Image 1 (tube, each protein chain N blue to C red):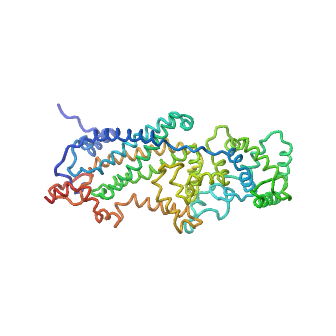
Image 2: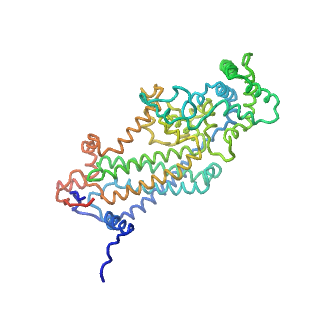
Image 3: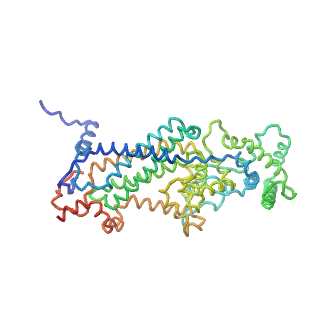
Length: 309
Length: 214
């Protein structure tokens, strides 16, 4: 196919592309070496379930209680972790989260509490507690777990030692042993290594940690909270992912900041805006903005001056 | 001596097509139109240079493994090189992109040049994001547990699990750099094929109409 187009036939000047690239590479390399030497990079130490359970044992036990009675963030999350009804976010009537389905199934009772505890050897009291738990009907398990979670929430500082007496069945023993296991570092390994020796999937330990308030407290102290433009910040005084400013911006303003479907709405909006960026040459009005804003006169001022003279 | 007949093999046809689309003097020209005379033109090549530094610093980190930079001062320095080269790469690219927007650089059958550049920008955001996920420190723990909600809400989390360190590492050091590198290559070839966009107001004597085979 032949098409009539115009081609530059005016004056040219010598332009050494290879030399320009080499000079740019040297300049950027020197700049990077200098910035790295002067400013280094942040490396705030990770938290483990062990450090969490030793640093905030009451928060750990309270979180474990919510995993056991099914009220934690993970237990009520919906897809892709479980089938909690009406938990998935929507854009209008459409829920892509629900459509994508449960691809990483997590049973917080079995995966976060009962499963790891069954691996603890030589503990008669724990074995009896687990036997009592597993021998009970689901309704009874829920009654014990909810009762203990409720009592622990009301106790001073959520301290298990301050929980008022009641019929909690084996739950106090199970959670006390889980705390001991966590503080020893055993729960970190148990959650990571389920069913395999080599493991790189931190989904379960990270979800468990995120269900507590310890991680969020540490993050907020580093100005990483969602209402602190956290997604684009990083620990310390570093520029972070400044290019995420628009994505983070939407979370700060209504209706997104108060919507239960904020994530789905922001992602939908950003998908549209990203598509618009790619298709700028074909969008009437947007593609004409450069003609209305005379920045091109600054860029090509020498050439324009030549035309006028 | 007669000239060799045009090869009818796939290889010969591909070579002929490539030579027609991008003859050597167009692929690596040593002259440019006089209007190519502004500092804004430097940011494209600065972006490319920063990309090379990102690949080299990231390559060294890959050689030593993802935990090296936590326990070695040399490793930490290379991590810093990687971080700052990414910051420069993104800064140069954003300036380049805004510059091209205000030049309306998609004019004259250059839409694909703009599109590949925009895709490159979006792909680079994804690559940088996965880099933050695989730092294996507090920052990556917090970012991954927060980001999962957005990805899950869009249905993406079902197959792109930001809490899976191994999966994110593969995306960061293999898949996304391959895609971004490939798109950058196409972008540069498009720039060379179509040439640098001319000014919006132009002296008609500087242009000639041609029939160009697309």
